[in-house]
Structure formats: structure tokens, C-alpha cells
Amino acid sequence: MRSSLRPYLPVLALGVLLALAPLLLTSNVALNFLAVTLIVSLAAQGWNLLGGFGGQFSFGHAAFFGVGAYSSAIWQMRFGLDAWTGLLVGTAMGAVTGLVIGFLAFRAGLRGSYFALVTLAFAEVFRVLANSSEVTGGAAGMLLPLKIGAGNLQFSDRATFLGLVVALTVLVLGLVQWIRGSRFGAQLVALRENEEAARALGVDVLAVKLKAIGLSGAITATAGVLYLQYFLFIDANIAFGTWISVEVLLAAIVGGLGTVLGPVVGALALHGLGELVKAAVGQLPGIDLAVYGAILVVAVAFLPGGLVGLARRRAAPRQVRKAEPEGGRA
Amino acid sequence: MPAADIAPAATMLYVENVTMRFGGLTAVDDASLNVPKGSITGLIGPNGAGKTTLFSIVSGFLKPTGGRVSFDGADVTHLPAHELAEKGLGRTFQIVKPFAGLTVAENVAVGAFLRHRHRADAETVAERVATRVGLGDRLDAPAARLTVAGRKRLELAKVLATEPKLLLLDEVLAGLNPSEVRDILPVIRGLRDDGITILMIEHVMQAVVSLCDRVFVLAQGAVIASGTPREVVADPRVVEAYLGKGAAARLARAEAADA
Image 1 (cartoon, rainbow over the protein chains, first blue to last red):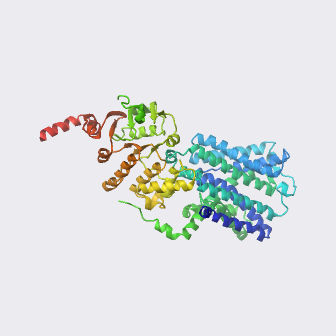
Image 2 (tube, chains in turn purple, cyan):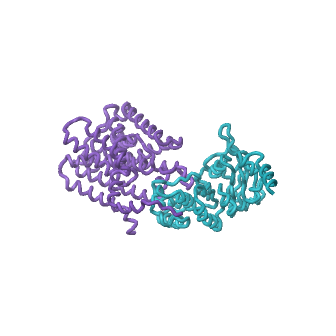
Image 3 (cartoon, rainbow over the protein chains, first blue to last red):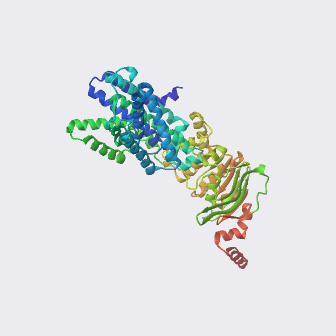
């Protein structure tokens, strides 16, 4: 039992660290920074499950983020139902959207850049639809009426809301860690590495990919709902905008593709640096985006395993060296 | 090629008049063969004869243009690869396909997960299988760092971990030096002794002769001969398939002249 809990230690450690933040931080700027960053990191965890573990690079995770946010908003404003079930409905709708997109794309055998383009197309179509449809409030977007209260998932102080975000972040981290050790996780990684070889070993590639994109959509949609509850406002360009599609894959790649902690580490590093540069340079519009671009280039060129990979190599230089020599058994 | 001359109950694999056309090219041409249970059967033939294509059809990676494939008494012609693997038909690839980013143990565990839901069980099986093919001391090495011989062993370990009844080996010995070949022959023989039926594509004739009970020869997509390894290599049609038309007669004349 003790050994089966060991893989969860890093998740627990990060969880404790994050849980302390709302208690220790008092400045609204810091709380705001952490809340937004963790929401992005949650969306990035969804992306990482499909893209990092499964090797299916989506360029349109905004589709799930937006579906989550809009589903919950419609649930609350058009049907007058409550925000907590809205959170569940948003998550479920994200899963359904994932399954539909996945079914269409994966059944047709789309891979690599073709899959990326199809996901981008879905996100863009959703954006245009949300921008013009009446039920989504059209171009004006949707403004949740202010009804502060835990029952409405609206909190008067940021720390409480941050606590909720931290709890969900850690929950999903635990889930991903569990998947990583499961049969499903092994099969998902196998098909990333070599789809034919996985099929030959009895992996039902379509079923595994569908499971992955369903879960991925659900997680990213949860982040979308949290975004809605935090800002109480969404419009098509926020919920279905390219910004979130790009940020989630940046966070996962910079943090470490296919690692459990990567998306969280990556999102914190990216947003942290972005804020630092903004503070240093002053109000130069778009400077944080330029920084993201530079970080991506550096990460792709010099950090094959992302920041988590770098930390791992630093922590265990010996093991790596031991594995270095060729294991020929002539 | 006559149909199976063996009772169905004793046949593990029965390929019946299989044809595969890619546009105007006929890669496999009305080929029939059977693999008796518990045997090591060879499939040989010159390059481009259609051996690997036939393997891909049998293992569910390609749908044949015509013909039938029966495995363990059931028609499996239209089953996808992963379902065949689940039924106990395993294959290796001529061009090995390791999961390069994973360790040896993780590679083999993917196969073991087919029959074992829990990680601990899958890992135990993986370790046992890896040790059996001689990778026991490389469990934690990244697959990408293995030598050619190591990758061939890994290819074998991955499929063995799925606990197959029938194993299709596509040139597992190619690219190995003679001492590496000598090391791996007993492993293959040991698999048969454990009750795994084997159909192997092989160019290393030393191995074919020493391992196979029966051999089918494929040339230009068609089965042109079958029999024991010694019968087959003496068959003029086989010699001609490898060395060109008239080669058998020329060889015979040359030998007569030498005598």
C-alpha cells in the first residue's frame, strides 16, 4: 500500500503548497494571478492528457473550454438552474464534445497536423456560432448576474474561490497520476509512441483515443466553467478564442509533455515570467505574448522534457548516466 | 496449391486462397497454407514475394481482396488487428517498432496489459517475459538505447507478453550476427515447447533448417512449394525463384561437369 501511494507524493506536495497559497497570500494581485494561472493550468492538464500522453496534438482546445463555459452560463441564465450543477453540466458537455470531435476525426484516421487543423476548425466554428446565436448572447456575450454566495459558486473574497480552484487542480492531478499508472494510461502512451505496434499488442486504438479526448474535453471544460464563475462574463472571443488553445499547449510543452505536473509547472512559469516582464517593461501591449513565444522557442530547442524533465535530470544525473551505455548482449 | 491436408482440429491457422491486390499489383496471388498446432512453420521466398503482406493480412492489418483466413477454427478474415491479438494471434514486425520513449519494462508491460488489468500483475509478467528473451538486466533502459539485437528481443518480448497461441515472427533474426542468432534459436524453440504455434518468415536458412517442421515458399505472391526444409531447398522451382529461370538446370549441369 505504501509503495502504491508513492507516485502520488509529488502531486500531494504540490497540492499542499498550492493549498497554503490562499491562506498566506493577501494581495489581490497575487491571488488573482494564481487563480487565473491555475484555471489555465487545469485546461492545460486536459490538453496534456490527449496531447502529451496520447500524442494527439489539438490546436483547438478552446472548443472544450468554451463549451464548458457557455454550457454552464446557459444552464444558469436560460434555464435558471444553479451553478454547482452547471459545473457538472459544463464538464459533461465538454466530454460529449470531445467524444463527437474525436469520433469524427479519429474514425477518419486523422493524425498529426490534420487532427490539429480539424480541432482548430471546430473551435473557430463554435466561436462564430457563439458570436451570432441568440442563446449565447451573440457578440455581447453573457454576463452572469451577481449573486454572491457559495451556493451560486460566487465568492466575495478571492481566496475562497482560489481554494476551490486549487482543490479541483489537485483532484485532476491525482486523476492524471492514476491514469498514468493504469492500463488505459499505458495503452495511451503506447499509441503515441507507435500506433501499429500498439494495435498488434491488442490496443483498441480508436477506443483509447476516444476515452482520452472525452476526458480531455471534460477537464478543459471544467476550467472553462471556473473561468466563467471567476469573471462572471464570457464572450465568444474569450471562451472560444485562440488564446486559450495556444496557452494550454504552451503550458504543457514548456512544463513537460506527458508529465503529470508539467501543465501546472508550465502555466506558473509562463504566467510568472509574463507578469515579471510586464512589470519590468511597463505597459507595452502584447509584451507577455512575445515572451511566451520566446519561451516556447527556448523550450522546444533546449528542453526536450520541459521544465519537469529538466528537474528530473538535475535530480537524478547518476541514473541517467547509468542508462547511457549500449546494452548489447553479443 | 491443394487445400488443407490436415484435419481442421489440428490446424491453428488456415489461409485459404488469399489474394491481395494494390491497384494493378498483385502482391499475394491465391495463396493457401496451413499451420498445424504446435508446429514451427516457415514462410520463405525471395524479396518482394509478398511474405510480409501475407502476414499483415493474417494479423488483421490489411483486408484481403479475396480469400479467407481461419484461426483456431474460426473465420477471422475481417477482424481488426487488436481483436486478433486478443484472440491469441501475435505478430512481430520486420522493421521493429519499439515504443522508443519508454523503458524496456514499460514496452513489454503494454503487451502484458492485454490479459492483466492491474499494473502490478502486468509488471510481473513483463519482467518474466523480458528475462526470458534475455533482457532481464535491461528492464529500466530506454528502448531507444537498445542495440539492434536488443530491439529484436524486445519486439519478441512485447508480443510474448500478450500470451499468444500463434506467433507470427517476421524476420526476427535479420540483422543479427551469427552468435546472436545462435543465442536466440533456443528461445524460439523453447516457445514451441511451451505450446505456442509459430509461423516465421526467415531468410537465415540455417535457422529455417534447424527450427522449422514445414516450410512454404512464396514467389511473386503465390505459394510455389511446400514440404520439409530439406525437400524445399532441393526443389528446382524454389531454386529458380531465388536465382532466376534456368538456374536449377545450370546448377545441375555444372555439378555434373565437376563430377
